[in-house]
Every structure is written in structure tokens, then in C-alpha cells.
Amino acid sequence: MAFKDFPAQQQSVQLLQRSLERGRLAHGYLFSGQNLDQLEGIARTLAKTLACEQPARQNGAAVDCCDACLACRRIDHGNHPDVHWVRPESKSRVITVDQMRGLMQEIYLKPNEAAHKVCVVVAADRLNDKASNAFLKTLEEPPPGSILTLLTVEPQRILETITSRCLRLNFSRGESLRFDAAELEWLTPFSEMAATDQKSLLSRYRLMDVLLRRLTAAKERITETLTARSPIQQYKDADKDLVDQWEEELTAAIEAEYRRQRADLLAVLHWWLRDLWLGTLGQQPGRASSSPGQPGTGAVVAADLFSFPQLKGTAAVAARISSREAMENLQVLEQLQRWLGSNVQEALALEVGLLKLRL
Image (cartoon, rainbow, N blue to C red; front, top):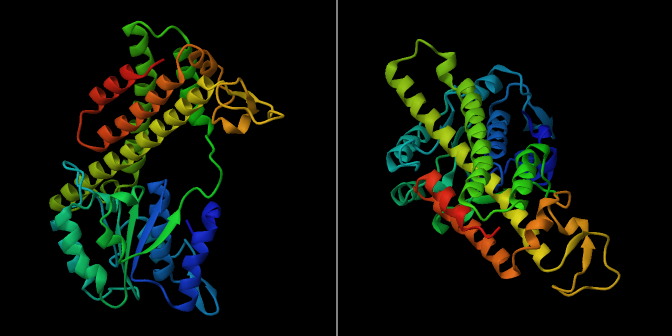
């Protein structure tokens, strides 16, 4: 992919391209956003632009990659000697001090082929304290010709001493909140099932099964996609130690992407629970009311106040719970996200969270 392939992120992309055009690229960047895959794509495109053999130019400076030359292809395949990636380790799902020391050894070596050394830290919010502290000196005074790029969907978890040394670019969706067909594919039956009687334990576990099926499908899809991209598939005769390293990196990448997609899925559920809360306040999706209605007065509001105005099950659930219970549901989902951000057992956390919902 090239920079032109990120149309929704053109504002931040143009800031990068302006810096490239003026020869004033920062040594340290923090890319934040909602989609780690997208952040990786942008970081990879920046690396390709710096190494590209036939880049798109403006005022004589490279501002985008050709996405076709040997250097671009090698970066896409993860085997360019001047582009290095660090990801959370598989067992603890953190980036360790040993990983960062290995990265720092690489960055202080002169570039082999390109004019720059590019290092990308994926999920930089997973840097543990020792790794962060070890990295500070390099981040503050990196060697000439080096570009350090940190990627995160949770910038609030990164130490202030790290963020203060980086130029931060935000690559959020850049558009109003939208939900695609795949998200509605599981939320529609979830909403319909929630609208039925949820007093029995069996009905609640059936509701949980809808969510687990979606998560299982996501995990299988992620595993298939990332395994196909792994260098393990391309270099069958590689050294065993290198293969072991690739396997660890693949396991960590699968887990990190699964966690991201799981958080996105629960965020969709959180927006549905918000619709539920609006319903308990007497609001309902439809036409805009002619005079401002107060919560609880039965006001009919514009459909765009609701994330999912087309889901019929929302009103049925809202009719049988109170606004206080609906607010507690939002708090339960927030707590569930915090649990899953730690090392608790996923199935247990989901079970406890869904059983606590007032439906």
C-alpha cells in the first residue's frame, strides 16, 4: 500500500508528506488510532517511501512509495535489512527490555541499503517499565538517519516520558461513527435474543454463545491471515532458531490482533447498551421532536442519535429495565474491558460480565 491508499487519513498523512518534502522528518513518532492494522500499514508505507527506488516526488523529495520496486516488496515481506519491527512477546504479551536492547543494537548500526534505519514498535502500550526506561535515552538522542515509530490504540497507557519525546499523529477513523455489515451480522441476533425473556440461566448462556461464536470466528480468521503473511511460509529452509523466533512473533501478533478485534467487538456492544439506555429515558429513534424533550418524557428524537436505530430488540429490552439498570450495564461493560486488558481468563470474564447485565 502507498499513502494514497489511506483516503480517510489524508489529514495526518499529508502532515507526514509535508515533513518528507521539507526534509524535516522527526526522529520519533507516536502513531495512535483505532485500528492497529491500519497503523502498521501507515508505518510500513513510511518505511517504503524512505527506501523506495522509484518514489513519487514533490519538489524533488520522495513523498510516497511506488509500492512495486524490490525495496518496497522486501519491506512488505518483512525482510528488508534496514527496517526492524518489535512486537509483544507471546507468553506475557509485553515488550521486554531484552527486545528493546536488541532493537537499539540494530539502530546504532549503519544502514545496509537505504538512507535510513526504520524501527517500528507495534503496540507500544505493551512496553513494560524496564523496556520503556531502557528505550528513553535512544528515543531522546537517536543516531542520525534513524526513524523510530511507535504504534498504539491505547496511548493513555504509554509513559509520559515516552510520549513527550515523540511527535504524535492521530490516525482515527476521521469520520462519523459507522458500523459495517459484519458487525450487524452478529449484533442483530444478539439484540433479538436479548429481547426474549432473559430470566433463566439457559437463555443468558445462549446469549453469550452468540458473542463467543463471533470471537471464535475472528480468532480463526486472524490466525489464517497472519500465518499466511509470516516468513515461516516463505522460507521453509530457514535456521531453526530463526524459525522459533518467527513462531513466537507470529503467536504474539495473533494474540495482539485478536485482543484488538475483541475490544472493537465489545465496543460495538457498548454502543448498543447506550442505545438501550437512551430507550429507558423515553427516547426512541424516529423523527426529530418539534420541541426539546426532557429525558423520561417520551421524546421522539432523530434516528442518528442512536447507533443502531434499525434493531428492534432494543426497545423491548428498554421497556422492562430502568434507566439506572441501563447505566449499570454500561459500567459492567467498562469493567469487562478492564478485566480483559489484564491476564484474566477470557471465558470466565465474559461469563461474569454477561451474567451481570440487566436485560
